[in-house]
Amino acid sequence: MLLGWALTRAALLTAVLGWWRFPGQNVTPDVVVAYHQWFERLRTGAFPVHDVTWQYPPGSAGAFLAPALLPCLSYAHAFFLLACAADAVVLGLLVRAAREGGPGRTAGPWLWVVGIAVLGPTVLARYDVMVTALAVAALVAVARHPRLAGALAGIGALVKVWPVLVLAGVTPGRGTRRAWAVAAGTAVTVAAGFHLLTRDSFAFLSTQSRRGVEVESVAALPFQVARRLGWWHGVVRYHYGSYEFLGPHVGLAGLVALAASAVGLGWLLWWRVRARTFNDALVYDAAFAAVLVFVVTSRVISPQYMIWLVGLGALCLTCRSTTQRRPVLLVLAACALTVLEFPVDFHAVTGSTTAGVALLLGRDGLLLVATVAACRGVWRGTTPSPDPSTLTNRPALPASA
Image (cartoon, rainbow, N blue to C red; front, side, top):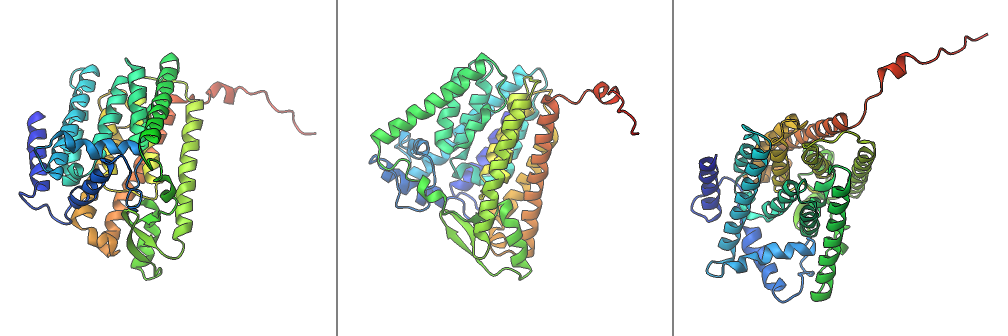
């Protein structure tokens, strides 16, 4: 396993360093240009609010400033190495979780090794692998160290929001209250620190409502198909940090996506209220299902979002009693299609060619099926089924006159 990780990561690292060319789009400009420019701005204690591509919570500043820890290297090279180090941390956490799950539980670590390799060099050219390390660390710690888990989840929420979902399946009781209380306290305290010590740390919130529908999202599929058939005549433009559809009905599609996220949140809350049976696997299973819900209902599905799902899915596979084996395998298949649509053939996606539309229908279709299966598994594994005796032994209704 370690040899497989070393070989695949060496290949990814040499690709982002420019020693060989991975097919398709160059994935490094985000780091070389955007991240580096943000780094220079963040060093002054201010956030890059005048850059419309800045869409991140204030905690993300830590990831963008981290290359300063390696001053002997260029910014980009330092970032790539730190991303690779975060990748190694995730693998170490998965190996630890697998050992605690019993002998022979190597499927989880192997899924991480293979899934990240399949996604290609994009993994090392985005900060999402660092966020995933925070989320996985929180989940591994939750059983024995709920306060630490809460702190990590709270910090993660300020880095990229979604890690707060990792606490969705924590077993009810004192540990849960501690984890959630510490998560909330940590998030509020760190947020207050950013507000007091930096400038414009929360200005990113004002730009979120202006985002459109990103071309790779589930909400974009109708536009992809309609554009290919000549029924829709809007445009694709680089807009607020991603390639988005702009034109007729896009605003409505964005509202529908937001409504779907709200429905997803409502379902998660309803499931949590109804849940009665908890086991060691549920904290991983529920986190995986919750993040899947918000990925497929988001107006944006960037390729790096798959890193989150691979990390959480790998944790699920470290438990023998997980209900998520099939959804996790579907996500792995979606990773293979993801690397084909970005970076290999992204022009086909932005151009709504037959190949591009087919790739997106396949990838997003797999994610939708995985989401339904994941939620169904979590629901069936935790909520009581109707007692058959209450259905068959009901008192007879009086006969009508």
